[in-house]
Image 1 (tube, helix red, strand yellow):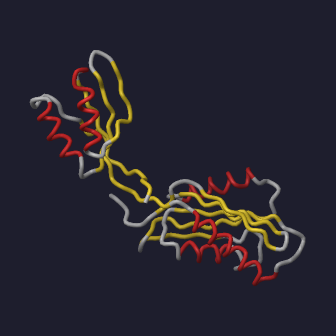
Image 2 (cartoon, helix red, strand yellow):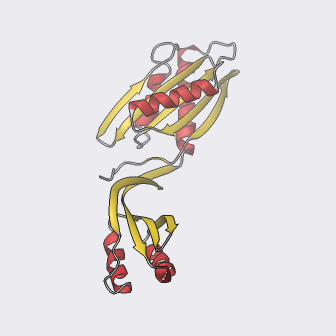
Image 3 (tube, rainbow, N blue to C red):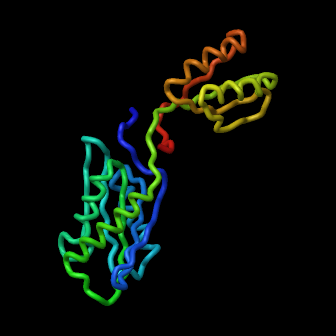
Length: 211
């Protein structure tokens, strides 16, 4: 399930001024076409009076990639393609960038546009925090009150997280563990409870962690 390539840990933005034209590069995680289009819509709404919103994105990563770019009214090949070239060379996957341009009144020419869009994208890619995906189990555990503190320590020792605690006649914990740490937790939990307790896996999924 886990993906070998790196992706992004949240959105990042950088700005560049070139002969009074303002280039605002915003980078975000995007794992689907729909997510990338929604991101573009978000940026358009944030900067409704901009001259151009140039979108490029990579879906997947490593050797399994799909890609898209658009010039959004800039001369063909001067905006989307340079942005996409930077994204390809980043080693990242599942990401989208929108470079928003406010025209400054001076034509930059084909070479100037390519350089500006390339540089703006390079700036935001260099600044973006990286993340990697790890496979995790989500699990439920019901336990008596007298074992709560010891179970909390046990979860922490096995790199787990307590996502939720519900208090009723007994306590129900919602837990998250890396795939390779749950078995060790379960073994120590059985020892702690004389074989009475075991966490029930309810879902196996992925999460992003800082790289």
